[in-house]
Length: 164
Length: 164
DNA sequence: CATGAAACTGGCGTGAT
DNA sequence: ATCACGCCAGTTTCATG
Image 1 (cartoon, rainbow over the protein chains, first blue to last red):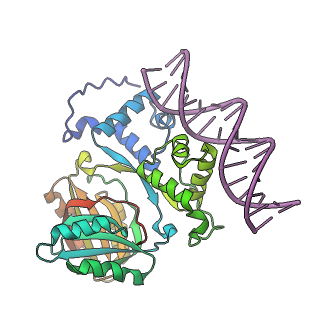
Image 2: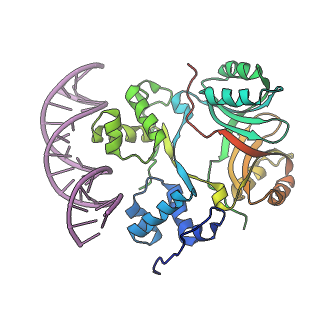
Image 3: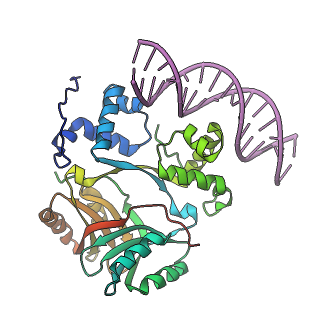
């Protein structure tokens, strides 16, 4: 095994060259599979010493490659089996209102500002289809909505890669 | 050891009474805040012993309330600063083709089957706007697409709750 | 490499069914 | 009496300087 002689004091975020060598890619893949891996186990899998792999993970966190760790809770188990994507087109001057409303509404699990005819894309979770009415009603005070129920998820959230 | 255990039938998912008592809610909230909390620290925060809280977390995993733990990687740090939501409307008989293509394409980080005029909603990450062309081209072989660039994310993915 | 902390295991007590 | 749950104290493994 080569000694980890990586001289990289000033590594910019845009310069992904050093940060994404083969070893770090393996670290990310293994951590993606199970973020709670112990450093020792992670070291075993990528064929490095524990301190070495710890240093790499710390570096990935500091530089923002690893933004954080998240808990994946099943909304259905929380009593919210119905999920929908809702596009919202705000009325004049209501942009900030919609964003604020999305933040405040507990049924909203995600909100993106997007280009195109609609300005926002929201992911919404409710106990039953009927319960969507109350949510939509409030957004309709400030704009127009288009709803699509999520029937299945062929690709669960995963780490993207550049094309081959 | 992989963290998510195999789901088991005994406890119905809709029977949230036992699974979502106050203690478990606190466990979920704390874990959502930091999924890498040690069991000891978690136990301290919710006011229980470590083995007790370990048992609760294990149960939440077994019953599928906790679906897993995910690594949040910044696509920009991976050289993919441009993100877009793309709706895809498959041509006749191309439903399965689109789903398979979404799975295969590394730029796709997420794919939902939805109701409405379009059948699929994809999240796509590319190094630059121009690179979207090649991706769209392949999907356009089997259907129509509508793209919206993600400008910002007012609400980062979070755990939804039922309305008050 | 050494030390302190945390993860696991088995055994025991308690309270509800 | 059984079962479900939590605590305690043992050993082993891990994190960190």
